Structures are given as C-alpha cells and as structure tokens.
Image 1 (cartoon, rainbow, N blue to C red):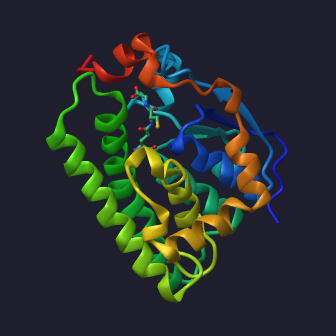
Image 2 (image 1 turned 45 degrees about the vertical axis):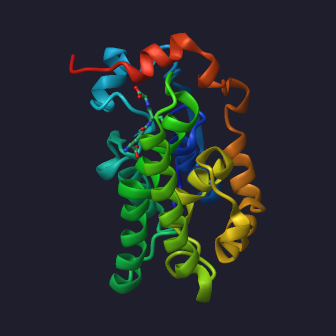
Length: 233
Ligand SMILES: N[C@@H](CCC(=O)N[C@@H](CS)C(=O)NCC(=O)O)C(=O)O
C-alpha cells in the first residue's frame, strides 16, 4: 500500500482532461490538493505554471513525495496516469502483456479520441462561423472512434482487461457525447461501459471536483479569445 503523507498538488480545471486525474486520485484514494488553473482567464500562462507544464495546458501534478522521496512534477494527462499507476500499483498492471493492452488504449485516447472530440466540440459549439466541413469531419471522426470502442467492448467489460487508467482517460470524453453529435443508442456496448463507469462512486466524486467553476465557453467571448487565439510566445 502506498502511504502518501503530503498531498499531491493537482493543477486542474473541470474539463475532460482534468477529470482523468481527479478520477484517478479518487479511485486510488490518494490525498490531493486542488490548485485551480482558470484556463478561461489565462492562468495557464503564469510563469510558475509554465515551469511545470511548458505546453500551457492542464492537468499537471506535483508529487511532493516523488522518486527518492523528492518532489517531481508531471504534465500530460497520459504521463500523469502512468506515473500514478506505477507509483501506487493501482489500475495499471505490471504484467507486460496487460500493461501493453492498457497503454495501447491510453495512447488511443490521448492521441485520438481526445483531440478529435475536442475539435468536434470546437466546430460544433465554439467556432464563430458554422463551418460545415469542420463540423462533418470531426463529428464523423468521433463517430468512427465510438464505433472502434463499441466493437472493442462487445466481448469485454473494460477497454483493456480490468478497469484501468485507459477507461479513466476515456470516460470524460464520452460524457459530453451529445455535444459531439453522437447518440449512445447507436453504440450499445459503449453505452453499457459508460453507464457502468459513471456509477462508480470515485468517478462521481472525481467529476464533481470544481464543478461550480464550469462555464459555457460558447457564451464567454473573453475565454474564447484566451483559448482560441494562441500563437507561439
Ligand atoms: N494533451 C494534453 C491536453 C490537455 C488540454 O488540452 N488541456 C486543456 C483543457 S481540456 C487546457 O489546459 N487548455 C488551456 C489552453 O488551451 O490554453 C493532456 O492530455 O494533458
């Protein structure tokens, strides 16, 4: 059992990428302290945050009790999940075959489902002009990815063996399926997976973290300027 005396600092905003880590920390029972990074107000550009997350994106963590008992910071949600999984031995199997299974689906989420669903949200909800090409392209791509998950889940309960960091990475990106133009009735195995995971008490708690800060970016022009007008600095 991992004993963690000092809480893990979670740099967070309540979005699908942030939820991955609040869910993990709740599932693993690790103590943590939430440091809100208001991405609609530009707090991701604070020099102190860029030091731990040079890509100006949350989530990130600082574990005061990292390797050798020294602090370590980690950015990129997939790397954070792997780090925490190795640290605790929970939800990230150490057997090589099952670990590879989990990693394939974790990277599938981080490199595929997340970015494509993000673009679907962008073109469907946030783009100031309705661009049919962008809407169709990303709505179709998310539809394809949901189909891949649905097939995968036809003969197994979770994406990769037991419930794992791969499922935790994906659940928050399926939660807003309506805003991605999808209908879970078209994907019965995915729907069953979604409903099973959404009932887990730790998932419910993880999704609740900072819920009071959630804003509709579609109605917030200042946040749109901060988030959608970025160039190299
Ligand atoms: N690949 C990153 C993506 C993280 C990400 O896109 N985070 C968004 C919120 S969901 C963010 O911090 N955006 C701030 C910005 O765009 O400046 C990860 O998986 O951690």
